[in-house]
View 1 (tube, rainbow, N blue to C red):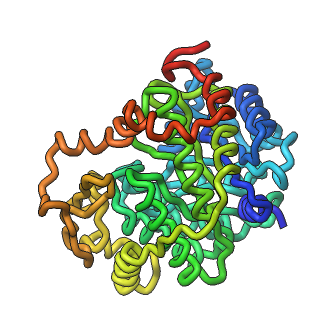
View 2: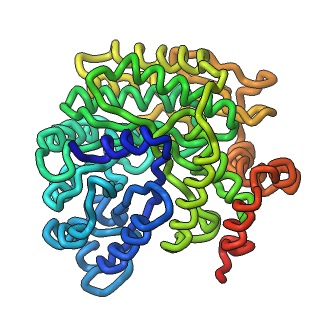
Length: 439
């Protein structure tokens, strides 16, 4: 048996955290160089090929046109290069020890998956909700239909690197400002959708939010619900380093990344998607990605997993209520998801997709916890701090910058300085003083 899921479990069994960056280049030579650098990092790593925006939106003509012009794209144009060229590109990598995941961002991924499998890549991510509502204007019902046949294509795969592995993006809806119970519910619902269409090797996701203790509670609840609801699946959990506005200071960026690595280690998660000190300014270089991978791996190794003293009961109960309410809406998970969003039983805060009610609102309380200000028609209660139910545009912008302010704050850096011991300071010294500059 091979594949990303098996690899993650094997590494976790040794007490190591798998670390992964998001990386994609249109030039095959640069893509290979990036994969080699990640493979050779001092860490247990997974390779990533991230697709360009033309490919993810189905504009194959534009992708080919830009390639012919020699224009650098913001990712790898898989369909324009074709399966044979991509297979040559990855031929030197042993995916039993260095799996490669294709990241795409598409609400209509069938053609992408077909070419990916033909190229010998069997790990990818997304979901019918998580890659529709945030990234497209495709009707949710159309995305569900497309993802149904796409999952069945993956489930039938018996080639190299199999079985096919699929990671739900449900724990990263809009990346931020979504209270944990909804992220967890969407994880489990997309996981059930995958299972219903034959996928047995899956991963769940959770994006680091604004309070470390709340994140621990959330992942504890997610793992508990996965054990209860995803019988018959092999699964692991992937943590994403904060997807909001990133700190601009070197130490702030490293501190935020370090906290996500500790979060993954403390909660027994198997994989971490990292960010770099360049996130606040530009797309990171390969070198910066490797430095982030090694920093995160080093931090995780120094964090022993154990009893977090948080059972996540409140988050668990809220997420379970959402899951049960959705599953009552239809004979299949896909049909139930479409009807649940139509009725507002699922409602993603600040999401402007036409099939999302957009009545729910989240707010950050004085302790940095994400709370429901209003829940629209979802079958859960809002518990806004100080009775606050209205969130203005200025409030939203302020909340989006919460982690940037917190980790760039001199008070925070002084308070957390004990995490930057001699080895950490040495690693940090390799980074520019501000992420937009270079050495």
